[in-house]
Image (cartoon, rainbow, N blue to C red; front, side, top):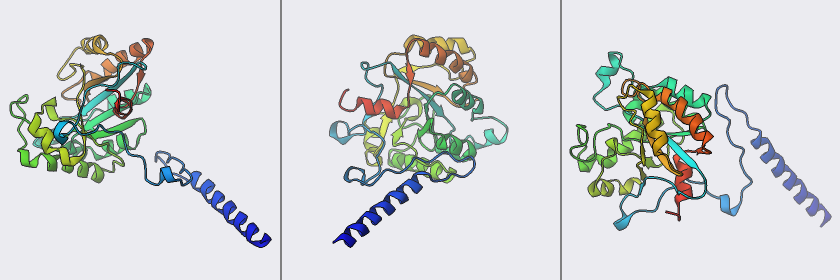
Length: 286
């Protein structure tokens, strides 16, 4: 009996040592640190999934606009990385649909953010997509592959046929994987913010939560950074989702506006979070 007890103790010690070594795992140069694994347990049998909302009426894709208004001053800055499927020639001619200066500003100010990216943008700027996706400060969500509208009459955008809406979203996720984005979120933003019941029904099987906003920054095609900053500061409430853009040619003053918005909101007691945190807080409290 004593020998069996000793063997059992030795096996336990070996298992504990293996976990400790795994927790000290190395990373490649430039690679984001990987979280240490937890000891196995019944509750940790499956990896945790990002928070989502339950399906809406009749099982339609749920729509999220803002987090809880009570329980603390939180705000999510979101940035649409827009590139329409047919804009390749414009990019080849030198138009910049990325905005590395904005991403650098967010990193310098240590602001977490959610980037809603089109698949076409990820194809054009795979290094930027991978860098953003591997930075734990950010999360990448889906803004369609083509940036075509999911309804008619949406800011002049071309329209995705209803039967191709789900595949357009899935094609964007495929583009993220190809670019090396590790864990894109199960969140989707309609191009132009335009949707209807048919679009919500078409995306039900995709298993995404549609994310809108309650604060429009007005940064698209703006030339006055102070005006953009004022519009955001005047509109933010606890739990707000702010929509901005990560497209240099179409939103050239966004980074400058962010440099005003962030310190002012922090002065007012706001804490910046990603959309996933707001959705997690909203579950059961909407």
